[in-house]
Amino acid sequence: DGGITQSPKYLFRKEGQNVTLSCEQNLNHDAMYWYRQDPGQGLRLIYYSQIVNDFQKGDIAEGYSVSREKKESFPLTVTSAQKNPTAFYLCASRSWEQGPANYGYTFGSGTRLTVV
Amino acid sequence: AQTVTQSQPEMSVQEAETVTLSCTYDTSESDYYLFWYKQPPSRQMILVIRQEAYKQQNATENRFSVNFQKAAKSFSLKISDSQLGDAAMYFCALFSGNTPLVFGKGTRLSVIA
Image 1 (cartoon, rainbow over the protein chains, first blue to last red):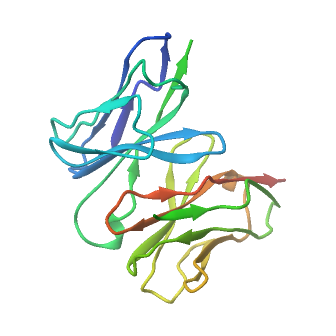
Image 2 (cartoon, one colour; image 1 turned 135 degrees about the vertical axis):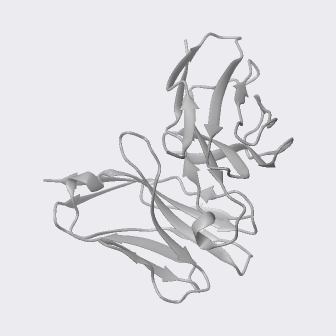
């Protein structure tokens, strides 16, 4: 079945460590997105990529980095510069095909990152 | 800048009753789309309903319907015959100008048996 796979489901990070969250999709979607979810804050955009080898910063990109070497993959690295990384991270994708059905996103099941 | 505002952090409804969740938005685009997403305790985001701004008719999906007031930039979600499985976080979202979806802060809905 087509979908988005995020791994791991739970991740623990020590202070000062970099960690990478995986996001893989087999939907042949063109665009991919990373959102951070905190209680009472909704979903805030970290980074997004509309084509391979290109990506743009979102509203809260500081302390994060991404790559888009393959259409299917959009990993997110949480660096030690991110001062408050404990949060729930959601990856999403969508197709560039025109039509209302393609303007909403398909979401992964998320990764819960905790700093210990 | 595009913004989405959900003014109700929490709502509750009795089982089988009707509840309305509020959402207002702002965009300078004339062509845009509005969405309601549901996030149950599993945290999987589920698309509930979608509204195209150019359509005057309010969207409906089974027990879920919207009240789209374009001039007022309002997009409320009505859930009829509420069920225990409707308990979740609900997010309103805006897509316009081919920029990433902008989300509101969410409304936590509780359903009381």
